[in-house]
Image (cartoon, rainbow, N blue to C red):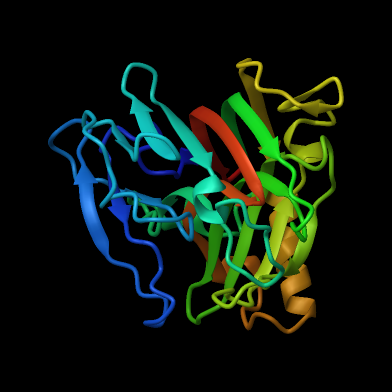
Length: 296
């Protein structure tokens, strides 16, 4: 075997846990609030995280089936068991409540997160020395609106996917991922920076491919020069390995990691979903997600 799909439960059929928001007064403590078991048997590997998006989603949930969690208006995450798709709806007006987005403040998230991948019996496919790393996903936007506020320091609705690159023998960490949507631009290059901008930032290197790479220069979730909620499925298929190498080399050059080579780091988790600064309402659905590691 020279290929392994390394994302556990990519159709989300084991269900999902619901996490509390970070308690910024208690060292950003997070607790498990509840669980939705889509198939009723398996232990979920996914977590729904709603960092800084307003009142607690779990405490304000409405009655739904085992495939959804919703407060009835502002936030909803759901799984479609028939096709293995997942839907994210975030209305950030619950957090901003008419106020502007302030530089240095937290901002709303609605993420699906998996903190540990495991190794499925063959650890070499998780090591960052693989020959190819193909990320695939289908996605569509079915709802999009924005309220312009002159007090916003920036207005940015983003749908991002990050993989966690960790050191095997140390605490090295890189946020490595791909931008799947940005309300500010149809096409942008890779982004390289250190995590900052709010008090709970990790300070670790962020390297994510831009939408230009995600859609091979195409429009992605834009049409006619603006974000488009036309409901049409768009496909992403990109070899992440050259960019993984670039991320490692940049972190090494900056002295941000201690690992000697990519073989000293591995992929051990991910998150995907909305990070939104400013007042937006948007829904994006995903399906057919996979991360395929190859040794040629």
